[in-house]
Length: 60
Ligand SMILES: [Zn+2]
Image 1 (cartoon, helix red, strand yellow):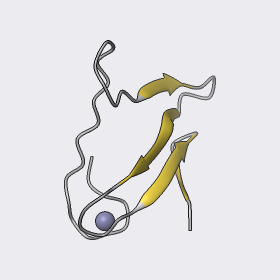
Image 2 (spheres, protein in one colour; image 1 turned 45 degrees about the horizontal axis):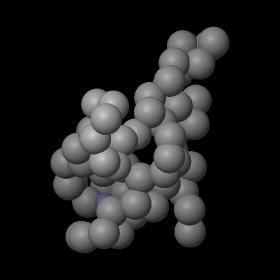
Image 3 (cartoon, helix red, strand yellow; image 1 turned 45 degrees about the vertical axis):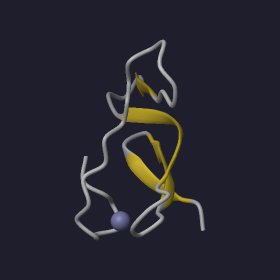
Protein backbone atom coordinates (compact mmCIF):
# COMPACT_ATOMS: atom_id res chain seq x y z
CA UNK A 1 0.00 0.00 0.00
CA UNK A 2 1.03 3.62 -0.40
CA UNK A 3 1.64 5.54 2.80
CA UNK A 4 -1.62 7.32 3.67
CA UNK A 5 0.11 10.48 4.83
CA UNK A 6 0.73 11.43 1.22
CA UNK A 7 4.52 11.13 1.28
CA UNK A 8 4.32 8.57 -1.52
CA UNK A 9 6.34 5.86 0.23
CA UNK A 10 5.40 2.26 -0.49
CA UNK A 11 4.73 0.26 2.67
CA UNK A 12 5.20 -3.48 2.67
CA UNK A 13 3.15 -5.29 5.27
CA UNK A 14 4.09 -8.84 5.99
CA UNK A 15 0.92 -10.89 6.30
CA UNK A 16 2.65 -14.25 6.34
CA UNK A 17 2.31 -16.09 9.64
CA UNK A 18 5.33 -17.58 11.37
CA UNK A 19 7.52 -14.61 10.67
CA UNK A 20 8.36 -11.64 12.78
CA UNK A 21 6.41 -8.44 12.46
CA UNK A 22 3.26 -9.98 11.12
CA UNK A 23 0.17 -7.93 10.53
CA UNK A 24 -3.17 -9.55 10.48
CA UNK A 25 -5.69 -8.40 7.92
CA UNK A 26 -9.33 -9.11 8.55
CA UNK A 27 -12.41 -8.48 6.46
CA UNK A 28 -15.24 -7.01 8.49
CA UNK A 29 -18.91 -7.86 8.04
CA UNK A 30 -19.41 -4.74 5.95
CA UNK A 31 -16.65 -5.81 3.56
CA UNK A 32 -14.08 -3.30 4.70
CA UNK A 33 -10.64 -4.22 5.93
CA UNK A 34 -8.99 -4.01 9.33
CA UNK A 35 -5.27 -4.37 9.90
CA UNK A 36 -3.75 -5.22 13.23
CA UNK A 37 -1.53 -4.09 14.91
CA UNK A 38 -0.83 -0.50 13.97
CA UNK A 39 1.64 0.49 11.28
CA UNK A 40 4.50 2.61 12.55
CA UNK A 41 7.14 3.67 10.11
CA UNK A 42 10.58 3.94 11.66
CA UNK A 43 11.98 5.84 8.70
CA UNK A 44 10.85 8.65 6.45
CA UNK A 45 7.59 10.27 7.53
CA UNK A 46 7.34 8.12 10.71
CA UNK A 47 3.63 7.69 10.23
CA UNK A 48 1.79 5.76 12.91
CA UNK A 49 -1.70 4.63 12.11
CA UNK A 50 -4.28 1.89 12.33
CA UNK A 51 -6.57 0.69 9.59
CA UNK A 52 -10.05 0.06 10.93
CA UNK A 53 -13.00 -0.75 8.71
CA UNK A 54 -11.08 0.48 5.69
CA UNK A 55 -10.31 3.84 7.25
CA UNK A 56 -7.04 5.27 8.48
CA UNK A 57 -6.95 6.07 12.16
CA UNK A 58 -3.94 8.20 13.00
CA UNK A 59 -2.01 7.83 16.21
CA UNK A 60 -0.76 11.34 16.82
ZN1 LIG B 1 4.16 8.86 4.83
